[in-house]
Figure (tube, rainbow over the protein chains, first blue to last red):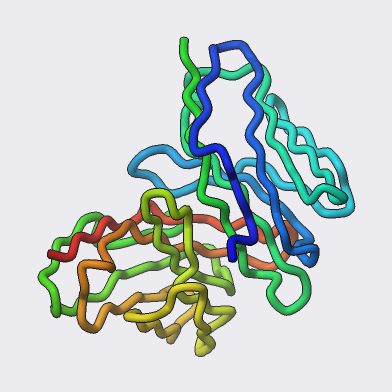
Length: 114
Length: 113
């Protein structure tokens, strides 16, 4: 049972345009959501997060939106740059006793074309 | 700080061989975990530890053992390697606090023939 879903395996965007990466979840007990970015042959690196009590968090070119009623979050990158080309993982953290454990989606490969 | 380090970077094993993947962190983090990444499968949690002497199973623990004798080190042992364990393995650590951002090592690419 996949609790965090990234239904788009890949996304291609032109440089300067907006990239929108989507993530759906099924577990209403998740209380924190994170996005990680991964380049080939490197470990994932933390990008941005959002608490379940918020609906938006912004950090520079990156904004994450959370729609709790729809159990959906999205990562917006504006403007997209070729260096943003990477695999993006959505992750969710359980509340209470499992608050160290993250559940990851399968990832979306973003390609930003010059 | 070196952050999270993993050794080796690459390893080829034959079926049935054993080996230990090393992981160390110098950030005094309480929580450490091991993930495997397979094509189309994302990151799946193998084992995790919330502190020295405490370990627990994740989503895919079969075929792997762990121990946590110190805060810094969290080795992952394959007792009898199988081709299904061919994967890229990532170790991660996190300290207390929100949002429990996990810091990942560079990974170990393991091939089992």
